[in-house]
Image: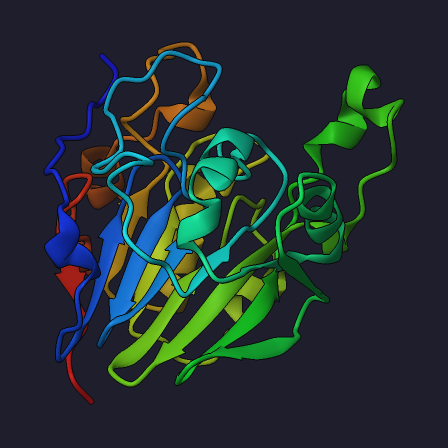
Amino acid sequence: MQAKAERIPMGPESFAVRNNTEVTWIGGGGAMINSRGTVILIDPLLEGFDMPILTEAPFSVEGCGHADAVLITHCDNDHFSRPTLLGIKDKTDIIHTTQYVAGLCSDLGLQAAGHDIHDSFKVKDITITLTPADHAWQNDSPKHAAERHYEMQDFCGFRVETPDGVIWMPGDSRLMQEQLEQKPMDLILMDISDSRWHIGLDGVVNMAEAYPDVPLLPIHWGCVDAPEWKEFNGDPEAVRKLICNPDRLFVKAVGEPFVLPHR
């Protein structure tokens, strides 16, 4: 049985100024951060995906409010959604991503800043750093490998340092040693896909052990109607049985915020 995520709609109030930092899973591998009114979208997929959807995003392209920045981890179309990015073009100030994906954005007429792994940049009072990811599955595909050779620097995660705490989005990735040696953080957006080009359940256990007291927000599960695809079929309750300190696994509905504690 495929685990299905619940959904809570998000309205204009979700984009409004507040006195805290809210982190919200917006479906698939995407998230939204509203830190005291600074809004950042990570890998938003709001429309135009080429597979059947089990749980819709909590707001539509039309219902998307202003975003100070969009962060894109890599070029897969469930993360780099061309229809979504074109649909919210006039509602976003800039896209931050890898050098390769920034070039793809430019081809679409989207304003994007390309960065190298470990580069840092600012979005108002938020500091964001690219972290490494290993997700070049395309090189194992004859179709995609014929187009270009994908490099490690084409894929990333993001460390997001807000006034209220640090959020880490590792991104789609096989587990890397460097990912087990990150600076302290206050929340991990944890991909729980048991796929060989994702972290996998063994990787989830290892990452949870590396950061035993950090809250975990499971993502990349329960939104795509594809029972035969491991990439979309994580089950947070199965993860809960495997990790240390399982009470810090916060299973949220799509559109349900997680509030960071004030420092």
